[in-house]
Image (cartoon, rainbow, N blue to C red; front, side, top):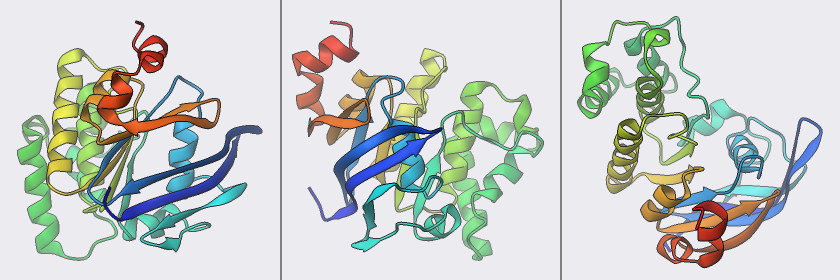
Length: 238
């Protein structure tokens, strides 16, 4: 593993009055693609919200680039290179595709770079180029997921955090989303992928963690976990 970009130690988080994360440790190294899998309600999304400053920590610490980022807000963390693609996509429905993408670059001031990155997203997602002046609320679920991914990439993240990117999508769209995630990772972006589709997530991952009831219960190489009979029984229906 490379030098850890993210180091989580003893993380405890409550969500809606419930102790959703109960003191977990894990790391994401420079250049890695790490998958966090688990059933619904395991605490995966709560973990991501804590990592991006959207939920306060009850205990533990989060280190990014060797420094604690506990207590910092989402705006500050995006500036530092942490970008979240939230569960449910969270696009601005009354704004156009182009406007949504530009919102992803709100922390940047390099106009030429922003224009170049806008074209890069349209090359990555040709369907969005065709509809660039269309309101985001009129897009299909898969197109909105593409837009949410493109918007996050507009901030030029060092770490891309993805929360259930395949949820509710048609199989052909799931293929496209995972293809893009693989390509983004291949370009050097570190990725933390939270995903219920355990087989796809672990097949893509350098390393994986299994989360159950707010705790990390297993960890290992992606392929190792994919072949583990306990993981196959619990998450792959075998």
